[in-house]
Amino acid sequence: MKWTQPAYLLLLLALPVMVLLTLVTERYWQRVRVLWSGQRARLHWRSQLRLALIAALFIVLPLALAGLTVPSMAGQSTHERMTLVIGLDVSKSMLAEDVLESPEPQRLANRLNLGRSFINDLLNELENERVGLFFFARDGMEVVPPTRDHGFIRYILRHTDMGRLTDSGSDLVAALTTADNMMADDSSQANEAVVLITDGEDTENTLEQLMNHLQSPKTKQRPVYSVRVGSEESVLIPIRKPGIPTIEGFYTDEQGITLQTRASDARLQHITALTQGANWHYRSDTSRAAQQVVDQILQHAQQTDKAVVSSLGWLDLSSLFLMFSLALYSLYMMV
Image (cartoon, rainbow, N blue to C red; front, side, top):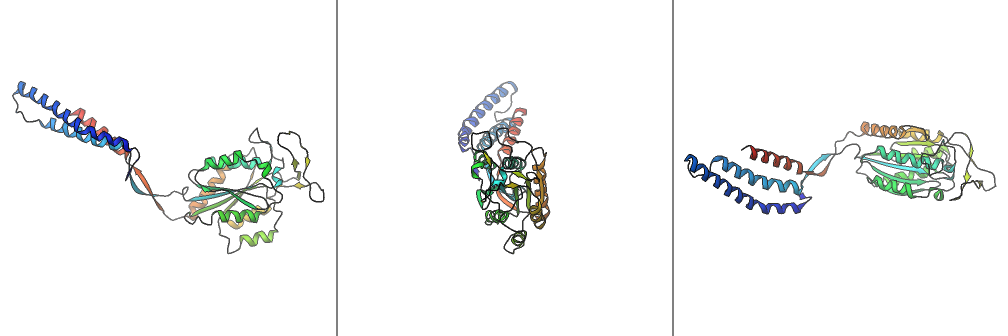
């Protein structure tokens, strides 16, 4: 056992003083009763009971204030047994401004900021899950390992300059590999899932290469949920510089041809179908999308995870001792 506020145990030093004061008071009233009623000088049973109640009260009350906790085994919920790894596409195509509006007025209305906003909405719907974050373009980069500190992930999303972070190319195999590596040492967690926020483009792999990776014996089977951002119509990718409101131009390839990007669900649907996940198209006016994603993830986890797992925790007995103290005081007043 352990104490959360052990300083309150010093109140136990008042026990002898309170017992002595109560004893003196009861003896005084006993002498008064003897003078008026002729009773024997021995303490009346009510006096003895009050003395015992005061002693018990000044033992239990310090224990309540000191916060006594004892080890206990508690069952883990689906939320506690869940590890969710979120991947945000930071390729150049995510700078395309083909979304309806920016969910945050101070940010540009592009795919990248829309994806960042969706992750914040997703975190709002989560409880005590372990959540990790990575960015990917041509390669994957772990940013936050799985943690229950969702506030730290919000901090990273808020203060990272995504525009400077973007890179050419997009590799969905690299994204899935990064997610696998982030959960490779997380064997204690039975429920695992991956969420990819992307426009769906994959410039580095053929469909056959993507399928071979998903069906490889080395790839652990876990559900992948994709959230596609961007329009299915071809658009240009603007070039902007910090602090300058106008567009300087548009990105081009090595031959000087202006690049065009078009969001697509084709690759994402193959991924989600093979992993028993699901696919969404997210726009700035899409309501409850994050809640739907979380509901789907937890529903799948509850269906596949039938084990009852307990973990060692600490049971706080403060409230129990406090209620007992109130009961002792109430009984003392009635006697």
